[in-house]
Length: 350
Image 1 (cartoon, rainbow, N blue to C red):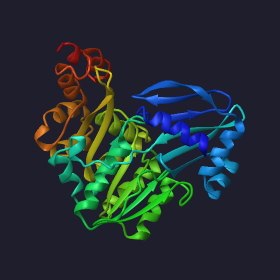
Image 2: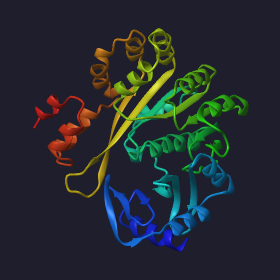
Image 3: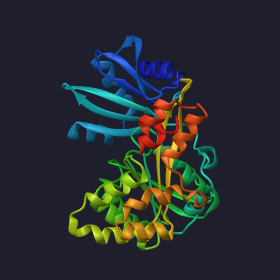
């Protein structure tokens, strides 16, 4: 594992989030969202195979042999916890590695206020957390669970691909199951959750219809479900989950979501204008009675307006934060316009 340790230490000290290893090709890493080349080191096919052998379990290797790809996480001495995605590229094994943060943040450190804390203190309901890949939703879910673990006596059941943050029981007790080692898929994991008497269920993915239906059923039975989904603002996340259904099924789904949804958090990482890194912005929807009515009646034209007026309840919008950060020159005006939902509104504030 000497080669891996050397490479990981070199890029981790730079602040890299990801590492890409291909046989007999340059090594690349991701820094502040951009891909950079690591000069002077190249791995051959045997070295990459040795890394896979030394970091994976027999079960992971059995899955790799059968499916030609596998994802797993491993604690690597002096480096920390890493997520390995092993796959074939032009007939040879390659690895994408994600550095998993050592620290689990408090909600306050991420900028969340009383509205978010109140939601995750509830006994049941659906919480959705979305972002593009690599932009922080796993860290945000970990912060939500850390808050629950610090304040409430709960049974917390997670279904992850793979387990990234490993929790120690504080006030709550954790069961963390990893796909495909402990459970075959998210739907089966959500079905099995009934049998372990959970108070809180976490699913790494809730994008498929059967997984969403099962998550809502768990909410209706009295559980809180925290589900990870893809990016977009809160309006786009909700619209995507509903519009992927057959037209005849959408009204019933809207009614269930309106009843069980507690909150949506979506996030992005924006490049700072001084090039010192990235800063997180959040789009937050709290499902107030007015929001419930909009969702149930499919009145989405008023969605962002009501969300923008809901700061007292804890809501935020991407555009309001982009405008504020641009005014403070934390991000450039160009960046604010590029990432805005309503670009004309942001450009008009320059």
